Amino acid sequence: MSILKRGNSYQANIQVRGVRYRKSFKSLEAAETWRAKIIFSIKNDIILPEDSKASSSWTFREASDQCMKIEWVGQKSERTNILNTLQIETFLKEYFKSSDVDLNKINTLLLDDFVVFFQDKGNSDSTINRKLMCLSKIMKFAFDRGKVTKLPKLPLKKEPKGRIRWLTLDEEKLLMEYLNFSWTSDYLDYYIVAVDTGLRTGEMLRLEKKDIINFNKIIVWISKSNKSRDLDLTPRAKKVLLKRTRKLKDNELIFTFPKTKLRYRFDLMRKAIPELFDVHPHVMRHTFCSRLIQLGIPIANVQKLMGHVNILTTMRYAHLAPNHGALDINVLAKYVA
Image 1 (tube, rainbow, N blue to C red):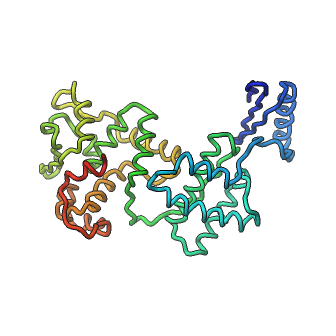
Image 2: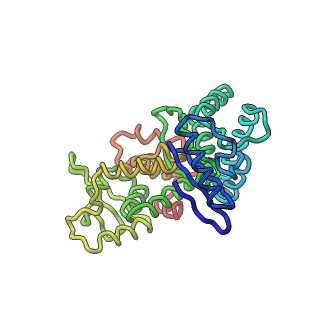
């Protein structure tokens, strides 16, 4: 709890049970009186007065307009976000019988009805999840700016296990920005090498300096069969490996954190970025394979690069293939540039 002096006014801030209350006053005495009244009301389960919440909360339309201008304009996902926003707005209009709604009125019970509304319209679970994440992005945008007091829990639907989750370039940008600013460079470096080589988590964590051949290829050894496969390096993966191996001996590991710590970091990421709620370390391998298929590289070549024993495993990605012919793997570097 605090009262902050901002210019000629005093801003009272209170956070209780995960809910934030904020209001500005001309005098310190008025701010302290308001804060005491709110605390008393909460402790005694008294209904709060209308002016107890953020004094300048946003409506859905205000929040979505601002989010669009600042976060989405110019992004590849802009059109999808516009369509999802319009459909969310249609639901809110029907639900509240109003042209617009205060974001603070959106709660978990409403979101349960949101799911039923779009299920009745024939939307799949994955489509409903994308709409929920769009709404969550708008609300988090407003929350970070003090325009909404609480973020409701998303009733995300369980998606079919057979679905292959891979990252779009917009999602990759979002994830890389998070990894870049959240911790040391270890996890961003790991992401770049993993997504540009398709290595399994175990293979990544077993990589040693001697596995890098002239910084153009990686030799991946399969312990049970003592066989290997080589993978060309993209420029950004090469740059990362040059940096990380500069002071290493040949038999030293390139990535030294345990698998449990990697999973923990991704758990934190999923909580911070609702749009990536279903992204885990293995998604990087899916992404590598999906990109190769989309670039038109033959299935047999992709099988070899992925290290799939059975080509049927690789065929799960075949629906992503374009109509044009085969391309060289080096075009992957252009794809992620």
